[in-house]
Amino acid sequence: MIKNLPDCPVETTLSLISSRWTVLILRELFTGTKRFNELKKSINNISQKVLTSNLRSLEDNGLIKRTVYAEVPPKVEYSLTEIGSSLKPILDALREWGENYKENYNYENK
Image 1 (cartoon, rainbow, N blue to C red):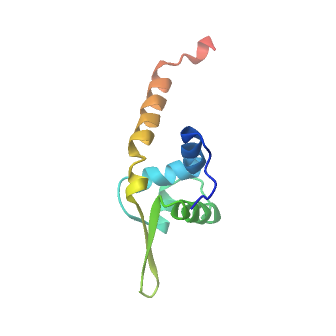
Image 2 (cartoon, helix red, strand yellow; image 1 turned 120 degrees about the vertical axis):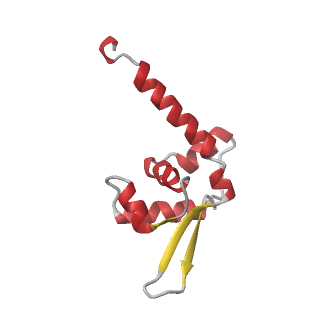
């Protein structure tokens, strides 16, 4: 868990989800529990090392949970926690804003 959170709530939120990869991982987990390889396949151009690092960070911050099953080979699944799920309206708003921007921004007038 982050120990020294910023005073500003917006800065706190950004410190937790500001990574491009973090947002994409959360996006994938909003549809349900995923295994590592499912996440890797669904997120273009993310390396195994970066995915592992981001998953650990999300887990440390309490946004996702990691479930390990006692099997051979080991089975590990990732899912959102309640607080992680509460980010959905924020990411939905980002998606909606991005769609609106793409539809309405005239690149030729730039």
